[in-house]
Image (cartoon, rainbow, N blue to C red; front, side):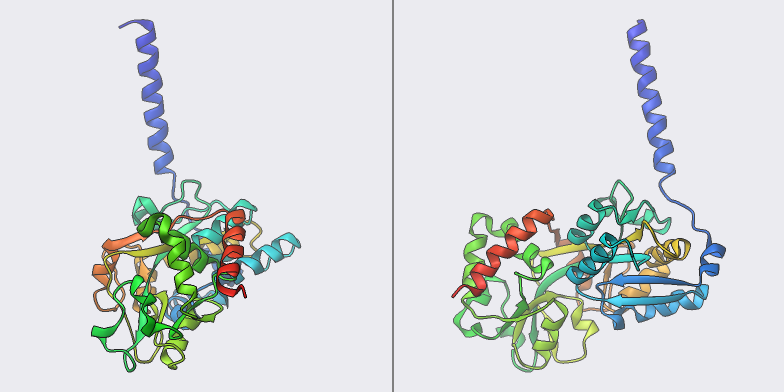
Length: 338
């Protein structure tokens, strides 16, 4: 073996061992006693409070740490966190939201690296290599409908079927000129429709949909009969009481959600413990019981055919902040131009 060959082999072995060491060092320990001394954790999140109840009660009972939870749409969560950060007065320890807005906040430096030991069991495709945000749930989107107003056999089976004249004025959806996740969803229809995705959006606008501020109120509109069908998360069939069901599809555009540890968290140890608990089997079971699709292997929400949804999820791409602005301006023109 020549000197050059020996040198290359040595470099390869060094790279191999560095890779092993770095992979083994991924997860970071959590100081439980320090977390308990901090006494509370402040969380900004996009999940409706009733769906977080079991998770928060389990965390508080196990560790004696109070959870102060503020809820808004992912867009509003990001707006509040960014406003506080830019003013130099961040009030959050943990921020939870969809991938798109988490990336925007991450880029501005809101988060500090933390890799939860419990999240090590999650599929690799969900993990962010820089460790600045922790995956913990996924949000498949489908069509929901009012079972008292629409028979299952007559419900639209695809998004294209929403363009039928019979659904005109009977569809609810978030305003894509204001709601980032809906803007992201409509743009990602390109994965199924190619260049014709804009034609679909324009046709959908002509259906005169009932616009709401975010995905959660879509379900309220359906239950109240203000709309017969709507575009929103599947999980709401469990989280809202009323005559509502979802359409089983071949594929579901899906948005992973993440938690980020505040770079200037007032309660950093409690925040780490909270994130790790949310990613643990115990925490994942608690949130799944409330209808959430989670990442821990073998855990599903108590929703009919949930196990059929998980294998058919297609992850949405994430626009940049600038791309979001352009998309939302375009949708404002499409949906509201006179």
